[in-house]
Structures are given as C-alpha cells and as structure tokens.
Length: 572
Ligand SMILES: Cc1cc2nc3c(=O)[nH]c(=O)nc-3n(C[C@H](O)[C@H](O)[C@H](O)COP(=O)(O)O)c2cc1C
Ligand code: SF4
Image (cartoon, rainbow, N blue to C red; front, side, top):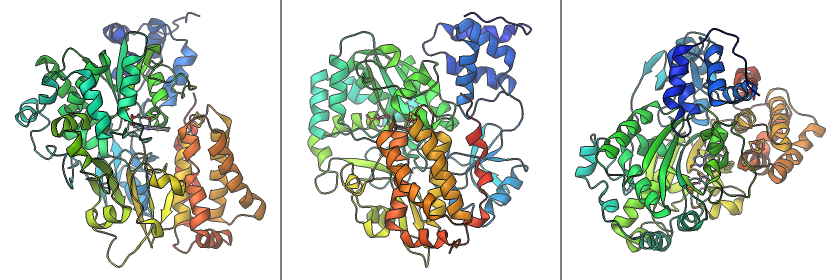
C-alpha cells in the first residue's frame, strides 16, 4: 500500500534518501543521518523514508521505535548506565548524584560497554566514563593486555593508523594469498572456536558458506557487543581496526564474498570514527583485495546481537530473531549464504596464520588452544580487558590479572558471559573459563564478560537488575520470554522490597523453567540463569528477603520505578 504524504515535502530528507538508496542496507544510515540533522526523527522525514524505500509507514514506526536511540521527539538525551558494574556504584544514593550532575532528568540506559571505568553516562549523543561527583571526563579506554597476541599491537598509539599498523605487519598475512583450503585447514588444526558466545568451530562455518549454493555470498561482522559487562571487542575496534579488517579480507576471499558488513553497536561512536577511517584507508590502498566493507551503525537493541536479528536489522526490518532453520550460512543476509561472526573471531585469524596452528595451540591452559579476551569488572582492584590463556580459571583472572577484591573484602559471586551466564558462587572460582566447563554448572562462558561481586553486595538486587535488563530487552516475539521475564521481575521486585508469599515464590522456578525450555531464542533461554543460580546457591539471601530483610540495605533504596522507563519504550 502506498502512503499519502500529508505534511510539507522535506526536500533535504529526499536528498539523504537518494544518496543512500543505491547502497546496500540503507535504512539505518538514512535514519541516523536524518536524526543527526534534526536532533530527532521528524514525521515529515519519516514519511519520505517510507515513501521512497516503499516501507509501510506503520512498519517503519514499529522498526524505529524498537531501538533505544532513535528519537521521535526533540530533547532528552541524558542518561546514565544501569549495567551490572555501574549499578554497583549507584548503590546508597549514588544515582542521585549522577542524575543531578546530568541535569536532573537523566534516565537509565543499558550497559554501553565501559565497565572498566565506571560510571558511564551519555550526554548530547556522546558517551563518557569515570563520572564521579558531577565531573564528566571523556577518556579513551586503554587495553590492559596480559599476554598479548591478539592485543599485541593495540597499545601502540599509532596502531589505529594505516601507516602504524602496516609498520607492524598488518595485511602481511592476507598478502601471502594462501589457498582457501590451506587457510581452512589451519583454522581447523588451530581449533579456533567462534568468540561470539557459542564457541562453534570457525572452520565448519566458513566451509559451510563456501560450499553453500547461491550467490552472492555475504560476510557480516557482529560488532554489536550488547552483552552487559562485555567490552572486549571495543578494544580491537578502537585500537587495532586493521587487524579486524585483515581478518575480514581473508575470510571474504575464502568464502567468495564481495560485500562485507560491519554491524557496530550505537554505543561505540569512537569506534565508528576509527573504523570509518581504517576502512577508507585500507580500501584506497587496495589492501582489502576488492572486498567492499560497509559500516552500519546500530541504534541500541540488545537483541540485535543475535545473528538473525542483526541480519533483519541490516535489511531494514524489525529486528526480531528469525526461525531456524534455515541457518545464516545457507540463507542469511538478503536470503543469501552468509558468514556472520564476532569481531574477536575474525581478528584472531591473521595471528593464527602468522604463528601457525601448532604454536597457537600451545598458548591456552591445560591443552586448550590459544588466548581469549576476557572483560573483567565490578569489585576488583584492576578492572579491564585481559588477554589470557584460554581456559584460565575465574580465580586466576580475578586475582592474578584483576588484583583481587577490594581491601578487606572477599569475593562472594561472579558472573560469566556478561549477564547471560548467571551468577556463580565463590566456591566455583576454580572453574575454567572455557566453552565446556561452565555448561556443567548450568552456565556458559558466552561473551567472556566477568563481573565480580564482593561481600558488601546484595545478590537479590544483582539478580533483580539482571532480570530487569532481560525484561526490557526481550523483543516480545514469543510469549514465554515476553511474559515470563515480566512475571519474574514483578516477583523479584516484591522479594526485594516487601517479601514474597509462598505461592508466588514457588512460581519463580516454574516460570524460569518454562522460559528456559520454550523461548524462541538465546535471550529467553539464558535470561533465567541468574535467578536459578540465586535460588540454588544463595538461599540465605533469598530467605532473608522473604521476611523483608536486605542485610546490605540496598533493596529498599532502589525503587522499581527507577528502572522502568526503557521498558515502556518499545512500541514495535
Ligand atoms: C541475545 C543474543 C545476543 C547476542 N549478542 C551478540 C553480540 O553482541 N556479539 C556477538 O558476536 N554475538 C552475539 N550473539 C551470538 C550471535 O548470535 C552469533 O552466534 C555470533 O555472532 C557468532 O559469532 P562467532 O561465530 O564468532 O562465535 C548473541 C546471541 C544472542 C542469543
Ligand atoms: S526469546 Fe525473547 S528475545 Fe528471543 S524471540 Fe522470544 S521474545 Fe524475542
């Protein structure tokens, strides 16, 4: 159905749409450009977009309102992070100070990936960290590398420039023009498992796309990094973008893709600029072997990290997860075979080709292959990104790399996989941080984001915050996740603030089980882990709250309403 334009023509918007219309995946860049122009998305501009891209206006409205950072009205864009690491520092009235510093009407936002320097805030479309007592300092994050292989060059100040990167060997592996089979065999011998969360063998995925019928083939870099307390990809994107681009060029040549897309989360504007320069420089220098690399900025939606949601988002559709099968390797972007993988996965490829599979395999712990980037935050002396032997234990990461808990404190719990891995007790600190071991505990390594909680923290409050996040970010497509997450939050709100009766308490594990069995995608399947772990490993804290007592004095101070605004915003 064609729309009728009732408002005056917006000729400038028409020019913006025309500029992008011939490009692949044009909707997101058009919307960003129009919002940058006007400060918000004006109705007249949206009508032009709907008309020219032949999108039903109602669908466009649903898509636009799905994202946190597209705005339909002017004004308000001051916010503070309510993620798991910053939240620890919002306790005992801290949020009041930050809100006041931001002008009084700031609202909470999901983690923008700056947990190494809490607290993170957003103002005027920019993200800042280390906001304390009204001071806002914009300081670039620096990678704190433990044993650098992936991050070997990232600490050099000029590594983000093409000249600096090339001086240290960037693009040398791609320049060797190894045969595709040699590259695939090397990745197989190296045992490279994808770093996006599931740990699926990279060579199998690459081979599946290479061998899939259909053309063209596409490559997509998942740089959404939306998992709270995860900020490992940000280091590569901001400090060594050419390492990623070399991995992309190698992968594109192996699978036979001419177009590659990097889907970058909205919250990383610094990386947007760095990557844009790097792509332009490498393309002009002919270093990408003819692969056209397109940079697309997300607009704030955790579900867009899920690969099929990401593909829908790129295609300009409402970013619901797709039903699988078909898998993206067979029918991905625009229905064509697509290799979609995480930033770290692509970035590690040049290093493996350089050192060889045998050497790579010796780098991990107890026979596991290679190194891994872990994001460490929360109650440790030295939060940061650490490159460590793959399979290092949580204790080694927290104590040897992170310096251990604060003075006179002890670790009582830690998360893994950001929030998706749940909440493990200190008795499990010797757990190897690999893809297999956490599964035995009903957890998962996921993104490699570890948040430490010491004995000053209320674990009921931590889990309540976790469930609020998943409730807010549930895309709403399937019933168990949409309703289940809301029902769990309601019960945890009551548990935290006034106690919980027997009937509603017993419903908690039942709802969790239903979600873990019946949800349609990984968000709903993993969301209840934290609740299940709370009930299993921290029964004393739960029992105390059921009688209305929070031993840490946190829960009563944190009104449920404080975390509500984003929940109500998703209209699509
Ligand atoms: C809710 C949800 C969010 C996800 N977010 C991300 C993300 O931000 N980055 C990422 O690389 N993978 C994310 N994933 C995993 C992707 O779906 C996909 O498995 C991954 O990009 C594959 O990369 P790999 O082959 O390098 O492991 C997410 C999955 C789910 C279910
Ligand atoms: S599990 Fe949640 S996020 Fe995933 S499709 Fe269902 S409603 Fe959407």
